[in-house]
Image (cartoon, rainbow, N blue to C red; front, side, top):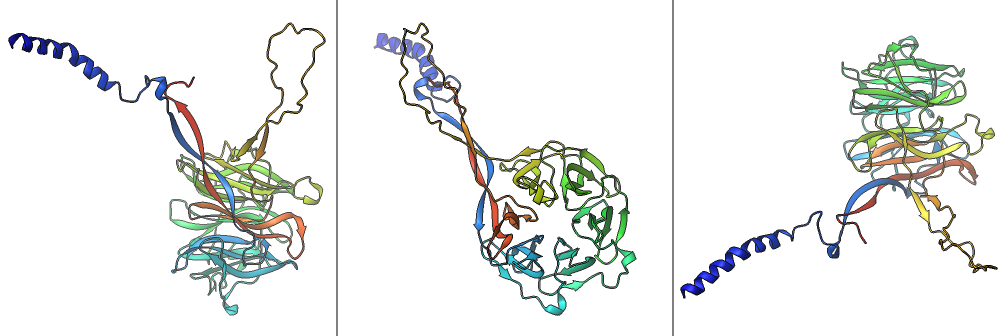
Length: 421
């Protein structure tokens, strides 16, 4: 018995380390055996566009405005006014939707609604929708607000013309806090006599307007885009592209106070353009906020330009470097010949011929190239609504009433703990 016990002890002493080692080898790690190779899948995402509707209930239009606003019932997208119908008339209709598919016309009261217009601006401020300036034949500088999209109030009616910005179209309006509280800011634009503007105005109530500067550092322009964005340094107002003396630009400017403007880049990576759109939204991975530039026109005289309209999408985290967001599909290479080569002499080389065929890459389809569309961020997506396209179609001129939005699509990159054989 004593001898048996002695052998048990010896076996345990020698085998215990082996048991521990065997147990630890079952965990995953760099030394995982080739026979159990399994890929690690790292998920990343990019954006693609999809159609919410090809034909919304509102008439096809361009130079309209869209905002996202809660009217007390729910948060909706709103489409306001614009240049619409086959007869190309200005509109003062108001439409809203909770899903981008079904659009309902708001029953406005004729005595309490802004006059028909296009090339205006609309923003949400102080729990109201605001409609500011635009073209109704002559360019105007009136200011209207509504808490529900039904009843509209002419806020600046009692203000003299000298007490606010001049009548204009193709301007921009943003809501920005310069350190003294949120205000509405009017930036640039164009007067009825085609005078380009480089002035900046602000207001806390829509009735009283104050000049921040009448001579900003950026060249006078219209049909540009402006957003409010934090580039990691501070929150700023931004001016992106636009039309300067009938020529499109791709410069980018920013300001923390509306008085002093700094040029971030004179020539961004995206093409020169005007009548485009810009929004602020996260990248597809939800890791960083960016400025996004969408579509537009690259030549003021589209009748003389080849492919004058755009449907591209660019983003930037700092206003300096811009990256195009585009998805490509690599098409399979099709052999160009099935003929078996013949040789008159025995080849001396045993090198296997390599193909010189260049792979074909195809862009994922997106909305048709356009200008004078409108874009908003809603329901964690970027939306593009309507606009002007280069193709004439019966009963719709060259205007659209389609609605598109981004979707997140998984991009998969595979890495192995042990290189596959």
